[in-house]
Amino acid sequence: MSKIGVTNPTIEEYNTFVMEFKKISQELGRAIKDKELKQYNLPSARWFAIHSNNPNVNSFSTFIEYEVRMMPRYGLSKENAIKYILDLQNNLGRPLKKKDLIGLKNNSIGEGVIKAYWGNFNNMKKELNLPITQENMTCKKTSIFNIKRDIVKLCAHILNTENRTTIKKDDWSLLSDIASYASCSNYLSQDNITIRNFIESIGFNLIEAGSGYNFLYDDEELVKSQYEFFFSNYLRDRGLIFNKDYYRDVRYAKFIMKYNCGYNCDYVINYNNKLIYIEIAGMLRDYKDWYYENRIINNKTRENYKNKLKTKELLLKDNNLNYYILFPSDLNEEYLSKIFN
Image (cartoon, rainbow, N blue to C red):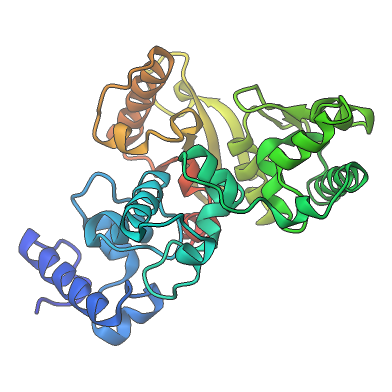
């Protein structure tokens, strides 16, 4: 076998390591963990991600998903999560149960994936038009009073942990011991109340899916999407300071000579005396594969956004800048920590 971690491997050398990775993973019944690579005399997780020619691969998780064709521990795409769920449902011959997905230890989808993309098991079933055999048990034993209490509990949690009064539908996945968004809506409607009305009555604001999302920090950083909000919170949790360690909406003309177009870069980060350029591809949440395969999106707004982002990436690449295009599926601790490590 070729030397481990060779800097510029040939296609044959890379494929040799990939085949060995697949072989060992099949014997284990799951993909090899990044911390196990050394004991199997394999290159690092970063090495596999960097040297893959697969356009979908930009991390160890996507390497496992798209190159090895196995289930990664973190960051499984929604596209493949849906495929896995529907294939399993077709093979079962009965309604899918929660334990069918998360009760297995090897190569299973994991409860985190369900929470990340749907919030809970029944929400997933509703979106995929699968039969629901049991409603949320919390809601079966609850009342309108308890529903209101759950919403107050959620709002208080968000205010205390994130210091925001804007509530999103996705926030219902933050707490596991409250009724689902759908159940809250159903119960409140019996009293001729909407979730929005009730949330506003206690001093908060509900942002519906597809609506704009704005949050202003005390230091006047303004985020305009839930993905920017997540990433800015991540930077702040690492101790980075707005307008000192990282900057927002920086014009490309400021860091690329002789370029006068009005494009802005979402984030420019000064970390360990090195600049990192970040673009958040929030509008392409479900179109990551389309972006890397340069497929035409049948939506004029998203297609224009994709082409603009392609132009930005070409500028960053041609000027040898250290950059990352972050899709919503990349916004997790495992992937982001690699950027700074």
